[in-house]
Structure formats: C-alpha cells, structure tokens
Length: 135
Image (cartoon, rainbow, N blue to C red):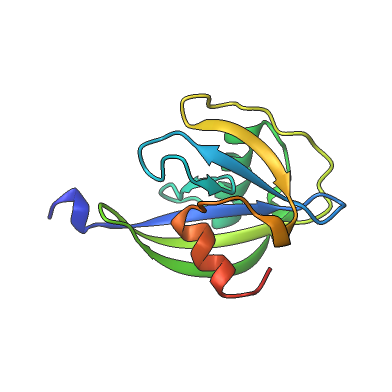
C-alpha cells in the first residue's frame, strides 16, 4: 500500500480569546501552503485527541492549555490532492495568551480573527468545519 492510500488522523485546535476571536496561522509548509489554519497536527500512536490538541498547541504556539480544557467540536473528511485526513476538531475558550512562532519553517504568523472576518484562503479542514456552521 502506498503512502497516498493511507487515511491519516489530524487534530485541529480552535482556541478563542475572551473577545471571541479565533487563533489562525498562515501555513508555510508544502501541505496547505499559504492557507490559514488553526494549530493542529497528526494524532500519534496511543495518544488521545485531547492530548494531541494540547501537545500541538504547545509545539506550534508556546501556549499551554491542559487537555481537559478541550471540548470536541466535530470531525471533517478532508481529501486533499495528495493526502486524505479525518480531522478531529477541538475547542478551548477564554484563552488569555499570545502565540509565538515556535516552528518558523511551518508558520509565517499567528493572528486573532473575528469569525465574521476570517482571512482567506482557509486550510481545507478549517473550511470544511466552518461549512458545518457549529462555531
């Protein structure tokens, strides 16, 4: 089986500040280059999705949120030209922290956005979640 035939599990981390703004980063990596996405990444073997959310948020932004603060939002079926993901989306509210660029090869910048004024283009998984109208 080739790597292109594997369905991967991703985790998206939607954090909101007290003003109700969501944190998004502009991607620099080949996968989703130049799109805006919440922090996130791959679920590792034996890891819970909430632990993955906390780990990825820390690795990408330097923000520490205990995994019990994440609540499940939904999931999306994200078929990219070269990859297929099932993405589990988690949310944490009232976060008072400023993100840092911890992986400069993967993220150009972090910014807070109002849900009604999101940047574009959005990363496929983010756009698919927004179509569900649950945020």
